[in-house]
Amino acid sequence: MAQLMKNQLHTVAVTGYTAEGLGVARVDGQVVFVHGGVRGEVCAVRILKVLKHVAYARVEEILQRSPARREPDCPHYPACGGCDFRHISYEEELEAKRCRVEDALRRVGGAGVPVEEILGGERLDGYRNKSLLPVSPQGQAGFYRARSHQVVPALDCRLQSPQANAAAAAVERCLRERGVAAYDERTRRGLLRHIYVRTNREGEALVCLVVNGQSLPCEEELAAAVRRAVPKTVGVVLSVNTQDTNVALGEEYRIIWGTDELEDTLCGLRLRLSVPSFYQVNREQAERLYGKALEFACLTGRETVLDLYCGAGTITLVMARRAGRALGAEIVAPAIENARENARRNGIENAAFFLGDAGAVAERLAAERLRPDVVVVDPPRKGLSGEVIAAAAGMGPRRVVYVSCDPGTLARDVKRFRELGYEAVRAAAVDMFPRTRHVEAVVLLSKLRAEHHIEVDLDLDEMDLTSAESKATYEEIKTYVLEKYGLKVSSLYISQIKRKCGLKVGENYNLAKSENAKVPTCPPEKEKAIMVALEHFQMIERSDRK
Image (tube, rainbow, N blue to C red):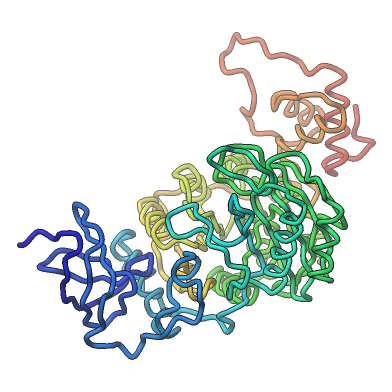
Protein backbone atom coordinates (compact mmCIF):
# COMPACT_ATOMS: atom_id res chain seq x y z
CA MET A 1 0.00 0.00 0.00
CA ALA A 2 1.55 3.27 -1.17
CA GLN A 3 2.13 6.04 1.37
CA LEU A 4 0.02 9.14 0.73
CA MET A 5 1.98 12.35 0.32
CA LYS A 6 0.98 16.00 0.49
CA ASN A 7 0.08 17.57 -2.91
CA GLN A 8 -0.47 14.19 -4.58
CA LEU A 9 -3.44 13.90 -6.96
CA HIS A 10 -5.72 10.86 -6.70
CA THR A 11 -9.02 9.79 -8.22
CA VAL A 12 -11.51 8.76 -5.53
CA ALA A 13 -15.15 7.78 -5.10
CA VAL A 14 -16.92 9.63 -2.27
CA THR A 15 -19.04 7.18 -0.27
CA GLY A 16 -20.34 9.19 2.70
CA TYR A 17 -19.81 12.10 5.09
CA THR A 18 -17.93 12.76 8.30
CA ALA A 19 -19.52 14.38 11.35
CA GLU A 20 -18.02 17.67 10.09
CA GLY A 21 -19.65 17.35 6.67
CA LEU A 22 -16.52 16.31 4.75
CA GLY A 23 -16.76 13.64 2.08
CA VAL A 24 -15.34 10.19 2.91
CA ALA A 25 -13.21 8.34 0.36
CA ARG A 26 -10.38 5.79 0.27
CA VAL A 27 -7.08 5.58 -1.57
CA ASP A 28 -5.61 2.07 -1.53
CA GLY A 29 -7.58 1.37 1.62
CA GLN A 30 -6.48 4.56 3.37
CA VAL A 31 -9.25 6.88 4.57
CA VAL A 32 -9.30 10.34 2.98
CA PHE A 33 -11.62 13.15 4.13
CA VAL A 34 -12.49 15.40 1.19
CA HIS A 35 -13.41 19.08 1.58
CA GLY A 36 -16.33 19.76 -0.74
CA GLY A 37 -16.90 16.07 -1.52
CA VAL A 38 -20.42 14.85 -2.30
CA ARG A 39 -21.55 11.28 -1.78
CA GLY A 40 -21.77 9.33 -5.04
CA GLU A 41 -19.25 11.47 -6.92
CA VAL A 42 -15.97 10.47 -8.52
CA CYS A 43 -13.44 13.27 -8.12
CA ALA A 44 -9.80 14.11 -8.65
CA VAL A 45 -8.58 15.29 -5.24
CA ARG A 46 -5.37 16.86 -3.99
CA ILE A 47 -3.93 15.66 -0.68
CA LEU A 48 -3.62 18.56 1.80
CA LYS A 49 -2.49 16.81 4.98
CA VAL A 50 -1.50 13.29 5.95
CA LEU A 51 -1.95 12.07 9.52
CA LYS A 52 -1.37 8.65 11.05
CA HIS A 53 -4.81 7.22 10.34
CA VAL A 54 -6.41 9.65 7.92
CA ALA A 55 -5.58 12.15 5.20
CA TYR A 56 -7.34 15.35 4.15
CA ALA A 57 -7.88 16.46 0.58
CA ARG A 58 -9.82 18.95 -1.53
CA VAL A 59 -11.71 18.48 -4.79
CA GLU A 60 -9.69 19.53 -7.82
CA GLU A 61 -12.05 18.22 -10.53
CA ILE A 62 -15.43 16.51 -10.54
CA LEU A 63 -15.27 13.54 -12.91
CA GLN A 64 -18.75 12.16 -12.19
CA ARG A 65 -21.13 14.74 -10.74
CA SER A 66 -23.81 13.89 -8.18
CA PRO A 67 -27.32 15.24 -8.80
CA ALA A 68 -27.22 16.36 -5.15
CA ARG A 69 -24.43 18.89 -5.79
CA ARG A 70 -25.41 22.58 -5.69
CA GLU A 71 -23.59 25.83 -6.31
CA PRO A 72 -23.06 27.58 -2.93
CA ASP A 73 -25.44 30.53 -2.52
CA CYS A 74 -23.34 32.49 -0.02
CA PRO A 75 -20.21 34.53 -0.86
CA HIS A 76 -18.68 33.69 2.53
CA TYR A 77 -18.99 29.91 2.09
CA PRO A 78 -16.99 27.93 3.08
CA ALA A 79 -14.46 30.46 4.44
CA CYS A 80 -16.46 31.66 7.47
CA GLY A 81 -16.95 28.18 8.92
CA GLY A 82 -20.59 28.76 9.85
CA CYS A 83 -22.15 26.50 7.20
CA ASP A 84 -21.06 23.06 6.03
CA PHE A 85 -23.63 21.92 3.48
CA ARG A 86 -24.30 24.78 1.07
CA HIS A 87 -22.76 22.72 -1.74
CA ILE A 88 -25.41 19.96 -1.61
CA SER A 89 -29.21 19.71 -1.81
CA TYR A 90 -31.20 19.93 1.39
CA GLU A 91 -32.56 16.41 0.85
CA GLU A 92 -28.98 15.07 0.74
CA GLU A 93 -28.12 17.05 3.88
CA LEU A 94 -31.04 15.57 5.80
CA GLU A 95 -30.12 12.02 4.84
CA ALA A 96 -26.49 12.65 5.82
CA LYS A 97 -27.62 13.85 9.24
CA ARG A 98 -30.06 10.98 9.77
CA CYS A 99 -27.33 8.49 8.92
CA ARG A 100 -24.90 10.26 11.23
CA VAL A 101 -27.22 9.84 14.23
CA GLU A 102 -28.04 6.23 13.37
CA ASP A 103 -24.40 5.30 12.78
CA ALA A 104 -23.33 6.84 16.09
CA LEU A 105 -26.03 5.00 18.03
CA ARG A 106 -25.03 1.72 16.41
CA ARG A 107 -21.23 1.97 16.42
CA VAL A 108 -20.63 3.93 19.65
CA GLY A 109 -23.81 3.25 21.60
CA GLY A 110 -24.26 -0.39 20.65
CA ALA A 111 -27.94 0.37 19.99
CA GLY A 112 -29.69 -1.22 17.03
CA VAL A 113 -32.57 1.24 17.13
CA PRO A 114 -33.22 2.90 13.75
CA VAL A 115 -33.61 6.65 13.43
CA GLU A 116 -37.22 6.51 12.34
CA GLU A 117 -37.34 9.99 10.81
CA ILE A 118 -35.58 13.31 10.51
CA LEU A 119 -37.72 16.43 10.70
CA GLY A 120 -36.37 18.99 8.25
CA GLY A 121 -36.74 22.74 8.59
CA GLU A 122 -39.17 24.80 6.55
CA ARG A 123 -36.82 27.80 6.65
CA LEU A 124 -33.23 27.27 5.55
CA ASP A 125 -32.18 30.93 5.95
CA GLY A 126 -32.79 33.54 8.63
CA TYR A 127 -33.96 30.98 11.18
CA ARG A 128 -31.59 31.83 14.04
CA ASN A 129 -33.20 33.82 16.86
CA LYS A 130 -29.85 34.24 18.65
CA SER A 131 -26.60 35.47 17.17
CA LEU A 132 -23.21 35.79 18.85
CA LEU A 133 -20.75 37.55 16.58
CA PRO A 134 -17.06 37.79 17.55
CA VAL A 135 -15.32 41.06 16.73
CA SER A 136 -11.86 41.09 15.18
CA PRO A 137 -9.06 43.31 16.53
CA GLN A 138 -9.75 45.50 13.47
CA GLY A 139 -13.31 46.06 14.71
CA GLN A 140 -15.10 43.87 12.16
CA ALA A 141 -17.92 41.59 13.29
CA GLY A 142 -18.43 38.20 11.69
CA PHE A 143 -17.73 34.54 12.35
CA TYR A 144 -14.67 32.46 13.07
CA ARG A 145 -12.99 30.67 10.21
CA ALA A 146 -13.19 26.92 10.78
CA ARG A 147 -10.84 25.66 13.50
CA SER A 148 -9.43 29.14 14.15
CA HIS A 149 -10.11 32.43 15.91
CA GLN A 150 -9.67 34.42 12.73
CA VAL A 151 -12.83 36.47 12.19
CA VAL A 152 -14.31 36.43 8.70
CA PRO A 153 -16.38 39.66 8.33
CA ALA A 154 -19.97 38.67 7.51
CA LEU A 155 -22.70 41.19 8.27
CA ASP A 156 -24.97 39.64 5.65
CA CYS A 157 -25.03 36.11 7.06
CA ARG A 158 -27.89 34.10 5.58
CA LEU A 159 -28.53 32.15 8.79
CA GLN A 160 -28.92 35.18 11.06
CA SER A 161 -31.99 37.34 11.48
CA PRO A 162 -32.08 40.71 9.67
CA GLN A 163 -32.18 42.37 13.09
CA ALA A 164 -28.93 40.69 14.16
CA ASN A 165 -27.11 41.73 10.99
CA ALA A 166 -28.43 45.30 11.24
CA ALA A 167 -27.61 45.67 14.95
CA ALA A 168 -24.07 44.34 14.48
CA ALA A 169 -23.46 46.69 11.57
CA ALA A 170 -24.67 49.67 13.64
CA VAL A 171 -22.40 48.78 16.58
CA GLU A 172 -19.42 48.20 14.31
CA ARG A 173 -19.94 51.55 12.55
CA CYS A 174 -20.49 53.54 15.76
CA LEU A 175 -17.37 52.22 17.48
CA ARG A 176 -15.26 52.74 14.40
CA GLU A 177 -16.42 56.36 14.13
CA ARG A 178 -15.66 56.94 17.81
CA GLY A 179 -12.27 55.21 17.60
CA VAL A 180 -13.12 52.60 20.23
CA ALA A 181 -10.70 49.67 20.00
CA ALA A 182 -12.00 46.12 19.68
CA TYR A 183 -10.58 43.36 21.82
CA ASP A 184 -7.37 41.61 20.75
CA GLU A 185 -7.09 38.23 22.47
CA ARG A 186 -3.33 38.09 21.84
CA THR A 187 -2.57 41.30 23.76
CA ARG A 188 -5.76 41.21 25.92
CA ARG A 189 -6.26 44.89 25.16
CA GLY A 190 -9.23 46.66 23.59
CA LEU A 191 -12.88 46.65 24.61
CA LEU A 192 -15.55 45.09 22.39
CA ARG A 193 -15.33 41.28 22.25
CA HIS A 194 -18.71 40.03 20.98
CA ILE A 195 -22.05 41.36 19.74
CA TYR A 196 -25.02 39.30 20.93
CA VAL A 197 -28.53 39.68 19.51
CA ARG A 198 -31.66 37.72 20.52
CA THR A 199 -34.93 38.19 18.58
CA ASN A 200 -38.53 37.01 19.01
CA ARG A 201 -41.48 36.20 16.75
CA GLU A 202 -42.54 39.85 16.62
CA GLY A 203 -39.12 40.99 15.40
CA GLU A 204 -38.17 42.58 18.72
CA ALA A 205 -34.50 42.42 19.68
CA LEU A 206 -32.41 42.28 22.84
CA VAL A 207 -28.82 43.38 22.17
CA CYS A 208 -25.86 42.62 24.45
CA LEU A 209 -22.34 43.99 24.04
CA VAL A 210 -19.61 41.85 25.62
CA VAL A 211 -16.69 44.03 26.68
CA ASN A 212 -13.25 43.65 28.21
CA GLY A 213 -13.98 46.23 30.90
CA GLN A 214 -16.71 47.78 32.99
CA SER A 215 -18.07 50.20 30.39
CA LEU A 216 -17.87 51.63 26.89
CA PRO A 217 -17.07 55.32 26.31
CA CYS A 218 -20.14 55.96 24.15
CA GLU A 219 -22.87 53.79 25.61
CA GLU A 220 -25.82 56.13 25.06
CA GLU A 221 -24.72 56.81 21.51
CA LEU A 222 -24.37 53.08 20.89
CA ALA A 223 -27.85 52.37 22.22
CA ALA A 224 -29.29 55.09 20.01
CA ALA A 225 -27.47 53.69 16.96
CA VAL A 226 -28.84 50.20 17.65
CA ARG A 227 -32.37 51.53 18.08
CA ARG A 228 -32.18 53.41 14.78
CA ALA A 229 -30.97 50.28 12.99
CA VAL A 230 -33.49 48.00 14.74
CA PRO A 231 -36.51 50.08 15.80
CA LYS A 232 -38.05 47.16 17.73
CA THR A 233 -35.08 46.89 20.11
CA VAL A 234 -36.35 46.36 23.67
CA GLY A 235 -33.03 46.63 25.46
CA VAL A 236 -29.29 47.13 25.14
CA VAL A 237 -27.21 45.34 27.79
CA LEU A 238 -23.51 45.32 28.63
CA SER A 239 -21.80 42.08 29.69
CA VAL A 240 -18.47 42.35 31.52
CA ASN A 241 -15.91 39.71 30.51
CA THR A 242 -12.33 40.55 31.44
CA GLN A 243 -11.13 36.95 31.59
CA ASP A 244 -8.63 35.31 29.25
CA THR A 245 -11.14 32.70 28.13
CA ASN A 246 -12.99 31.29 25.15
CA VAL A 247 -16.27 31.66 27.03
CA ALA A 248 -18.10 34.48 25.29
CA LEU A 249 -20.45 35.94 27.92
CA GLY A 250 -19.33 37.36 31.24
CA GLU A 251 -21.03 36.90 34.59
CA GLU A 252 -21.91 40.58 35.19
CA TYR A 253 -24.67 42.36 33.26
CA ARG A 254 -25.76 45.98 33.25
CA ILE A 255 -28.60 47.63 31.37
CA ILE A 256 -27.51 50.47 29.08
CA TRP A 257 -31.01 51.16 27.81
CA GLY A 258 -34.43 49.50 28.08
CA THR A 259 -34.77 46.05 29.62
CA ASP A 260 -32.53 43.02 30.04
CA GLU A 261 -35.19 40.47 29.05
CA LEU A 262 -37.07 39.54 25.89
CA GLU A 263 -40.49 37.92 25.63
CA ASP A 264 -41.19 35.17 23.13
CA THR A 265 -43.79 32.48 22.44
CA LEU A 266 -42.86 28.81 22.10
CA CYS A 267 -45.18 25.80 22.13
CA GLY A 268 -48.02 28.10 23.17
CA LEU A 269 -46.07 29.33 26.19
CA ARG A 270 -45.26 32.98 26.77
CA LEU A 271 -41.61 33.10 27.93
CA ARG A 272 -39.26 35.72 29.36
CA LEU A 273 -35.61 35.26 28.43
CA SER A 274 -32.51 36.89 29.87
CA VAL A 275 -29.24 37.08 27.94
CA PRO A 276 -27.62 33.94 29.48
CA SER A 277 -30.79 31.81 29.49
CA PHE A 278 -30.61 28.75 27.26
CA TYR A 279 -33.19 28.85 24.48
CA GLN A 280 -33.21 26.93 21.22
CA VAL A 281 -32.01 29.13 18.36
CA ASN A 282 -34.54 27.81 15.81
CA ARG A 283 -38.00 28.47 17.20
CA GLU A 284 -40.04 26.49 14.67
CA GLN A 285 -37.80 23.44 14.83
CA ALA A 286 -37.63 23.65 18.63
CA GLU A 287 -41.39 23.22 18.73
CA ARG A 288 -41.08 20.08 16.60
CA LEU A 289 -38.21 18.84 18.79
CA TYR A 290 -40.16 19.34 22.01
CA GLY A 291 -43.21 17.79 20.42
CA LYS A 292 -41.18 14.67 19.67
CA ALA A 293 -39.80 14.64 23.24
CA LEU A 294 -43.36 14.92 24.56
CA GLU A 295 -44.44 12.04 22.32
CA PHE A 296 -41.60 9.87 23.61
CA ALA A 297 -42.47 10.73 27.24
CA CYS A 298 -45.88 8.99 26.82
CA LEU A 299 -47.60 11.11 29.46
CA THR A 300 -51.13 10.41 30.68
CA GLY A 301 -51.57 13.28 33.16
CA ARG A 302 -50.51 11.42 36.29
CA GLU A 303 -46.73 11.19 35.93
CA THR A 304 -43.94 13.08 37.68
CA VAL A 305 -41.36 14.37 35.21
CA LEU A 306 -37.85 15.52 36.13
CA ASP A 307 -36.07 17.79 33.60
CA LEU A 308 -32.39 17.98 34.56
CA TYR A 309 -31.27 20.76 32.15
CA CYS A 310 -34.30 22.99 32.10
CA GLY A 311 -32.84 26.35 31.02
CA ALA A 312 -35.67 28.87 31.06
CA GLY A 313 -38.08 26.03 31.72
CA THR A 314 -39.47 25.40 28.24
CA ILE A 315 -39.35 21.59 28.21
CA THR A 316 -40.42 21.43 31.87
CA LEU A 317 -43.50 23.55 31.21
CA VAL A 318 -44.36 21.65 28.02
CA MET A 319 -44.23 18.42 30.03
CA ALA A 320 -46.14 19.95 32.95
CA ARG A 321 -49.19 20.54 30.78
CA ARG A 322 -49.46 16.78 30.18
CA ALA A 323 -48.08 15.44 33.50
CA GLY A 324 -49.11 15.33 37.14
CA ARG A 325 -46.15 17.57 37.95
CA ALA A 326 -42.83 18.54 36.42
CA LEU A 327 -39.58 19.51 38.14
CA GLY A 328 -36.74 21.36 36.45
CA ALA A 329 -33.09 21.82 37.41
CA GLU A 330 -30.61 24.34 36.00
CA ILE A 331 -27.25 25.72 37.15
CA VAL A 332 -27.72 29.23 35.68
CA ALA A 333 -29.47 31.40 38.27
CA PRO A 334 -31.05 33.93 35.83
CA ALA A 335 -32.47 31.02 33.84
CA ILE A 336 -34.13 29.59 36.95
CA GLU A 337 -35.61 33.01 37.68
CA ASN A 338 -36.94 33.07 34.11
CA ALA A 339 -38.34 29.55 34.51
CA ARG A 340 -40.27 30.41 37.67
CA GLU A 341 -41.60 33.60 36.13
CA ASN A 342 -42.57 31.69 32.98
CA ALA A 343 -44.53 29.18 35.08
CA ARG A 344 -46.42 32.01 36.80
CA ARG A 345 -47.06 33.89 33.56
CA ASN A 346 -48.54 30.81 31.94
CA GLY A 347 -50.61 29.79 34.96
CA ILE A 348 -48.77 26.48 35.38
CA GLU A 349 -48.89 25.53 39.05
CA ASN A 350 -47.63 21.94 38.86
CA ALA A 351 -44.03 22.88 38.03
CA ALA A 352 -41.13 23.56 40.39
CA PHE A 353 -37.56 24.62 39.64
CA PHE A 354 -34.26 24.01 41.43
CA LEU A 355 -31.02 25.95 41.10
CA GLY A 356 -27.95 23.73 40.97
CA ASP A 357 -25.80 21.31 39.04
CA ALA A 358 -27.85 18.56 37.39
CA GLY A 359 -26.01 15.75 39.17
CA ALA A 360 -26.20 17.37 42.59
CA VAL A 361 -29.90 18.18 42.22
CA ALA A 362 -30.65 14.65 41.04
CA GLU A 363 -28.79 13.16 44.00
CA ARG A 364 -30.56 15.44 46.46
CA LEU A 365 -34.00 14.66 45.04
CA ALA A 366 -33.19 10.97 45.11
CA ALA A 367 -32.16 11.33 48.77
CA GLU A 368 -35.56 12.96 49.39
CA ARG A 369 -37.20 9.83 47.98
CA LEU A 370 -38.28 11.24 44.64
CA ARG A 371 -39.10 8.61 42.06
CA PRO A 372 -39.97 10.33 38.76
CA ASP A 373 -41.81 8.38 36.11
CA VAL A 374 -39.90 10.16 33.35
CA VAL A 375 -36.50 11.86 33.37
CA VAL A 376 -35.77 14.32 30.57
CA VAL A 377 -32.23 15.46 29.80
CA ASP A 378 -31.17 18.11 27.28
CA PRO A 379 -27.48 18.59 28.15
CA PRO A 380 -24.84 20.77 26.47
CA ARG A 381 -22.69 19.36 23.68
CA LYS A 382 -20.38 17.52 26.08
CA GLY A 383 -23.26 15.29 27.16
CA LEU A 384 -23.89 13.86 30.62
CA SER A 385 -21.38 13.10 33.33
CA GLY A 386 -21.25 9.64 34.81
CA GLU A 387 -22.63 11.05 38.06
CA VAL A 388 -25.73 12.47 36.35
CA ILE A 389 -26.40 9.20 34.52
CA ALA A 390 -26.00 7.20 37.73
CA ALA A 391 -28.25 9.56 39.67
CA ALA A 392 -30.92 9.57 36.97
CA ALA A 393 -30.93 5.78 36.62
CA GLY A 394 -30.79 5.36 40.40
CA MET A 395 -34.20 7.02 40.73
CA GLY A 396 -35.64 4.22 38.60
CA PRO A 397 -37.76 6.18 36.08
CA ARG A 398 -39.72 4.04 33.64
CA ARG A 399 -38.52 6.21 30.75
CA VAL A 400 -35.61 8.53 30.01
CA VAL A 401 -36.06 11.00 27.17
CA TYR A 402 -32.64 12.16 25.96
CA VAL A 403 -32.55 15.30 23.81
CA SER A 404 -29.11 15.81 22.30
CA CYS A 405 -27.25 18.28 20.11
CA ASP A 406 -24.28 15.94 19.57
CA PRO A 407 -24.74 12.39 18.21
CA GLY A 408 -21.31 11.30 19.50
CA THR A 409 -21.88 12.12 23.16
CA LEU A 410 -25.49 10.95 22.87
CA ALA A 411 -24.31 7.52 21.70
CA ARG A 412 -21.70 7.36 24.46
CA ASP A 413 -24.34 8.10 27.08
CA VAL A 414 -26.83 5.66 25.57
CA LYS A 415 -24.22 2.96 26.11
CA ARG A 416 -23.77 4.06 29.74
CA PHE A 417 -27.52 3.99 30.33
CA ARG A 418 -27.69 0.53 28.80
CA GLU A 419 -25.18 -0.73 31.37
CA LEU A 420 -27.62 0.50 34.03
CA GLY A 421 -30.63 -1.24 32.54
CA TYR A 422 -32.02 1.29 30.04
CA GLU A 423 -32.39 0.32 26.39
CA ALA A 424 -32.84 2.71 23.46
CA VAL A 425 -36.22 1.83 21.92
CA ARG A 426 -37.00 4.84 19.71
CA ALA A 427 -34.92 7.51 18.02
CA ALA A 428 -35.64 10.49 15.80
CA ALA A 429 -33.63 13.42 14.48
CA VAL A 430 -34.57 17.07 14.09
CA ASP A 431 -32.65 19.45 11.84
CA MET A 432 -32.39 22.41 14.17
CA PHE A 433 -29.54 23.99 12.19
CA PRO A 434 -30.09 23.71 8.40
CA ARG A 435 -26.98 24.11 6.23
CA THR A 436 -24.64 23.35 9.15
CA ARG A 437 -23.19 20.03 10.36
CA HIS A 438 -25.20 20.14 13.59
CA VAL A 439 -28.25 17.98 14.22
CA GLU A 440 -30.51 17.36 17.21
CA ALA A 441 -31.74 13.92 18.18
CA VAL A 442 -34.31 12.51 20.60
CA VAL A 443 -33.90 9.02 22.02
CA LEU A 444 -36.35 7.16 24.23
CA LEU A 445 -34.67 4.88 26.77
CA SER A 446 -36.88 2.33 28.47
CA LYS A 447 -36.19 0.60 31.77
CA LEU A 448 -35.88 -3.07 30.89
CA ARG A 449 -33.80 -4.62 33.67
CA ALA A 450 -35.35 -3.60 36.98
CA GLU A 451 -32.71 -5.34 39.11
CA HIS A 452 -30.28 -2.50 38.33
CA HIS A 453 -32.47 0.16 39.97
CA ILE A 454 -33.37 1.44 43.37
CA GLU A 455 -37.07 1.09 44.15
CA VAL A 456 -38.33 4.01 46.25
CA ASP A 457 -41.76 5.51 46.85
CA LEU A 458 -42.69 9.09 46.04
CA ASP A 459 -44.44 10.93 48.85
CA LEU A 460 -45.79 14.12 47.25
CA ASP A 461 -46.91 15.57 50.55
CA GLU A 462 -43.43 15.08 51.97
CA MET A 463 -41.90 16.83 48.97
CA ASP A 464 -44.19 19.85 49.46
CA LEU A 465 -43.87 21.00 45.86
CA THR A 466 -47.34 22.36 45.23
CA SER A 467 -46.28 25.36 43.19
CA ALA A 468 -43.36 26.76 41.26
CA GLU A 469 -42.04 28.55 44.36
CA SER A 470 -42.95 26.27 47.25
CA LYS A 471 -39.59 24.50 47.52
CA ALA A 472 -36.07 25.88 47.43
CA THR A 473 -32.73 24.16 47.26
CA TYR A 474 -30.10 24.64 49.93
CA GLU A 475 -28.10 26.73 47.46
CA GLU A 476 -31.08 29.01 46.82
CA ILE A 477 -31.60 29.52 50.56
CA LYS A 478 -27.90 30.29 51.01
CA THR A 479 -28.00 32.81 48.15
CA TYR A 480 -31.13 34.51 49.51
CA VAL A 481 -29.67 34.86 53.01
CA LEU A 482 -26.36 36.15 51.68
CA GLU A 483 -28.01 38.75 49.43
CA LYS A 484 -30.57 39.92 52.02
CA TYR A 485 -28.51 39.81 55.23
CA GLY A 486 -24.90 39.43 54.11
CA LEU A 487 -24.65 36.23 56.14
CA LYS A 488 -23.17 32.93 55.00
CA VAL A 489 -25.10 29.91 56.22
CA SER A 490 -24.16 26.27 55.89
CA SER A 491 -26.31 23.35 54.75
CA LEU A 492 -26.02 22.05 58.31
CA TYR A 493 -27.61 25.21 59.73
CA ILE A 494 -30.39 25.12 57.11
CA SER A 495 -31.20 21.49 57.87
CA GLN A 496 -31.31 22.27 61.62
CA ILE A 497 -33.86 25.07 61.10
CA LYS A 498 -35.89 22.96 58.65
CA ARG A 499 -36.14 20.24 61.28
CA LYS A 500 -37.06 22.85 63.88
CA CYS A 501 -39.92 23.98 61.62
CA GLY A 502 -41.11 20.43 61.15
CA LEU A 503 -39.90 20.18 57.54
CA LYS A 504 -38.66 16.86 56.30
CA VAL A 505 -34.90 16.45 55.96
CA GLY A 506 -33.04 13.31 54.88
CA GLU A 507 -32.63 10.98 57.86
CA ASN A 508 -28.85 11.33 57.94
CA TYR A 509 -28.57 14.59 56.07
CA ASN A 510 -25.91 16.84 57.60
CA LEU A 511 -25.66 14.85 60.81
CA ALA A 512 -22.29 14.33 62.44
CA LYS A 513 -20.11 11.80 60.59
CA SER A 514 -18.91 10.14 63.80
CA GLU A 515 -20.66 9.33 67.03
CA ASN A 516 -18.53 11.61 69.21
CA ALA A 517 -18.27 14.53 66.82
CA LYS A 518 -19.55 17.87 68.08
CA VAL A 519 -22.23 19.43 65.86
CA PRO A 520 -22.30 23.26 65.85
CA THR A 521 -25.63 24.93 66.55
CA CYS A 522 -27.02 27.59 64.25
CA PRO A 523 -26.49 31.08 65.78
CA PRO A 524 -29.67 33.10 66.51
CA GLU A 525 -29.06 35.75 63.84
CA LYS A 526 -28.57 33.09 61.18
CA GLU A 527 -31.60 31.15 62.41
CA LYS A 528 -33.74 34.26 61.96
CA ALA A 529 -32.36 34.83 58.47
CA ILE A 530 -33.02 31.21 57.44
CA MET A 531 -36.56 31.48 58.81
CA VAL A 532 -37.20 34.51 56.62
CA ALA A 533 -35.83 32.62 53.63
CA LEU A 534 -38.15 29.68 54.31
CA GLU A 535 -41.07 32.11 54.45
CA HIS A 536 -39.93 33.76 51.23
CA PHE A 537 -39.92 30.42 49.41
CA GLN A 538 -43.33 29.56 50.96
CA MET A 539 -41.94 26.53 52.74
CA ILE A 540 -43.40 27.73 56.07
CA GLU A 541 -46.05 30.22 57.12
CA ARG A 542 -45.19 33.15 59.36
CA SER A 543 -46.98 31.41 62.25
CA ASP A 544 -44.54 28.50 61.92
CA ARG A 545 -41.70 30.52 63.46
CA LYS A 546 -40.60 29.18 66.80
